[in-house]
Image (tube, rainbow, N blue to C red; front, side, top):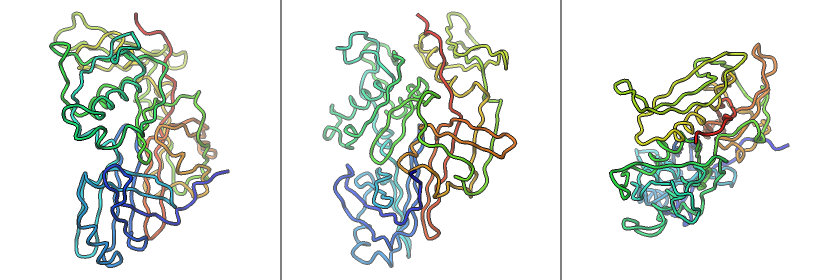
Length: 384
């Protein structure tokens, strides 16, 4: 059975933009600290510390020429690429050099949308036809990065070959209304993804250079690993939180000032156990149809029924090197089952990995994870 293990060595390589052509690399002995993470629906971060005395004069000169957004940081765990993205800040004092970087979604946060966001056509030959939310996200990214008036070169951050999709079965009709059919919503691409597509069921993360456009895992998806309390070193916390639970999720565009002409979407089922337990979400977005509101309710229902029971690994605890899961499997969004035998709230439950936090230094490697309840989206037909 595969195990997490304990990293014997981390190496860091500074690449030119695109992550393929090396610029410089501090020696292993000069690399004193490595911190990196992967996270769901957010931008991951990484930081390395380099001892100037161990790096030597030649390497120090190269480090002094690092340019944010021109160079990228790549991290290798025992030779395997685990993280990559653009450098955003370098800091030097008398003894050490600090390099900070963001994962590749940072490029999407610094690229303003220049395309019309109207995906309503039913003809597959139409470039703006309806489709799974993951496909629409892919098309928005491609249309902005592949070329156009403001692109220095096609796909200048070298992202498009590294997009991986896991499409939902539900079709998304997405439109950002303007005063005419040629209106462009001028906000960063990542804001479109976070504000409009994540609520519709998109889930994204990065692994190395790959951008994963996926969907929330359900109980029908296979588990990447099965952990027990022996897989965790240190304390754990089990929290059954009813404040986030619901049997019906309502999403409405109604506001308190004008309730006429409002629409709503609802997802869920009245429970014989909990009865009717509603959650109401008000959307201030303009131009939402009843289908849009139903889709928002469907995505928000996930993980609310039964009452969400979270497993927390507090600061100071970490995965054991003997945990039956590899670093390659620890991708935010994947299903991981946990058996907490011996606790009063003993449970065997499926979870979704939401965050992976890794630190490496003189004391070795510390791998922390955060798990959130997994649920099944409802059920029920969309409005016609």
